[in-house]
Amino acid sequence: ELRQAVTRVWPEAEVHIYGSELTGLCLPSSDLDMTVLGVPDKTTRPLHTLAGELRQSGIVSYLQVIDQAKVPIIKLVHERGMVAADMSFGQPDGLKTGWLVREHLEEMPP
Image (cartoon, rainbow, N blue to C red; front, side, top):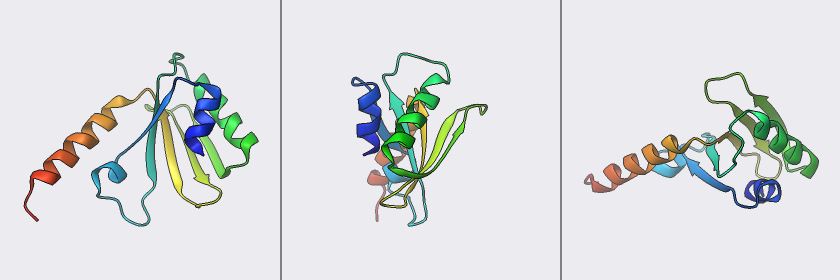
């Protein structure tokens, strides 16, 4: 549903999960780290645009835009699954790092 909300606003955008979910190191209490790639506007406007779409769609029970941080994010809780998530825009480095960690973990003996 979160991906659908993003692509309703930006049809060419891609939503990627990174962090502990990608590496397989997540705990049951972990949140999801997500980044949206392919949105041409590099300001904080997309945060507010997506926040409006998420509020209107009714799929979040909690939403906070943090646009003054080094990496601006939307903190949210998905209504149905009660899963917490942080969404950023244009941050491919977390995704690259997650894949690197995952590859190294797969090379390690059990």
